[in-house]
Image 1: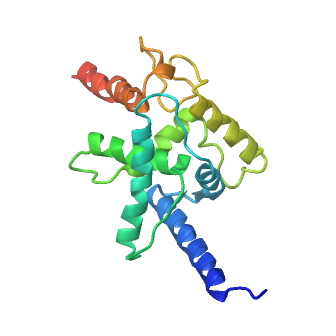
Image 2 (image 1 turned 60 degrees about the vertical axis):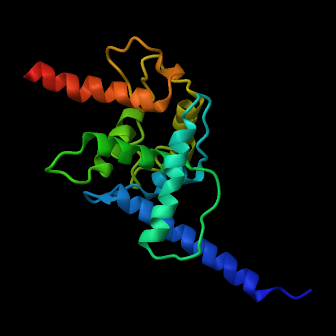
Image 3 (image 1 turned 90 degrees about the horizontal axis):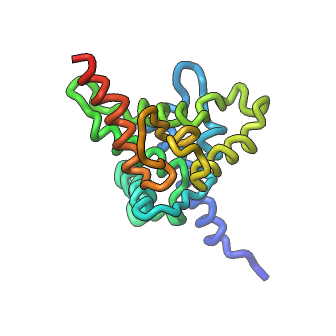
Length: 197
């Protein structure tokens, strides 16, 4: 049976497109910054499907998937699609963009990278840079941390999750990510500003 050369070309084209998209996502969050790179970490996040158990967290998946259309439009890939469920990387970048739209000021027009790495720091993933990835048993430990996030087995105050709280009264494991984010921003940014005034 002869191989269909067109099928092989399509597969190669798909791989090229997916690879281009991955690097586009990495550029959004400055993966290679300050002479430290995080390609192994982001690759692990992009291999992991984002799933949810709390109502309305599907909105975070939708935000992540919308990044694909933005990429295809910006890079002028007409009539192309990127299929599949939302990845953890896509969800986190989509969420960082939402935070940036809330926290935007006149001085800094795009702080998506800042908010993404703030979440990485909160959850303990910022230590897995490419230089120490294998020393820290990266893939295994990153997946354990992400499983804790997705399964909502972090602390009631959000510790070991994306948005740890100091003064919360709500069990963060039971509320949607959007409200966790809102409470975190209120506690760490708006309330601080009011106290300083």
